[in-house]
Structure formats: structure tokens, C-alpha cells
Length: 168
Image 1 (cartoon, rainbow, N blue to C red):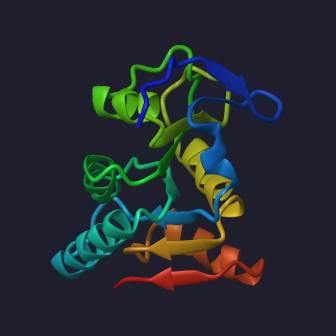
Image 2: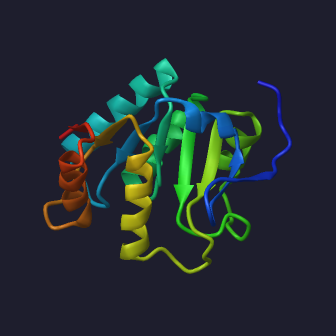
């Protein structure tokens, strides 16, 4: 792919992006995983990531939990299309070089859903996850801890009519 110059582009109020904006028009699969996952969930998620990477299926996520970050690394290394959504100001964010490289090569977009600079809180994580799920054609949850917010969010998404697949 041809390298592109990176510049910010606007979305809705207070939101902006960097990288390949056309990825947002594709049927995206949202990916989520709790911070702590079983070995079974990790194996299932990594097999799923390889399948998505080989098929070049576009994935959207906050890619914040350790398992989400591992899945992102597989996807980006394979050049699969990814939309990374952060819950902080894009202009002040220190993005990993792999993200910037993928965005510059047209394989990724980085979206800032808020124009804030504070650290990620539970409230912001919930807002980010809802933002991601609402823009996806399908939601995949590798693992949702029973005591965490993600399991409650996934149940809410199902009530709202979103299709949610569970890997474990």
C-alpha cells in the first residue's frame, strides 16, 4: 500500500480520527475482552485473531485489555484493517509506532471519541465500549468476567438488538 501523510479528520462533535477514514464505512466487527481471561479464552481469541487477520476482516476495539492488545498485534502485523478507538484526545495521545505505521499505510484508523486528556476511567471505558459496539455490524466477546462491567454491557447490547458472539 502507498504511504499516506497523516492528518486529523473530524467525525461527530468532539471526535476525530487519524489514518484511513474509509474503514469506518466497512462492516466492522467489535472485539472485547475483560482484563483477566482464562487460558481457554486466550487460545480462542488468538485463533479468532488469526482467522480475522488471514481474511483481512476489519476489526474495531479500544484494544485496551492485555488480550485485546495481543489480538491487535496479530491483526496489525498481518496488515488486517483495524479501527482503534481511544478515550482521550488524539492530538495529545502518544500512539504506539505500530499503530502509526498501520495508519500511515492505510490499514488502520485511530479514533478519539472524546476530547479529553485525563486517564481512562471505568466511566470512559464504558462509554468507549458502547461507542465501539454501536458502530459494529457484529460484536465478539472473548471473555467477560462475571464481576466486571463488560458482561453487563454485552447483555445490554443484546437487549438493544446487537448480535454478540462469545468465544468462551
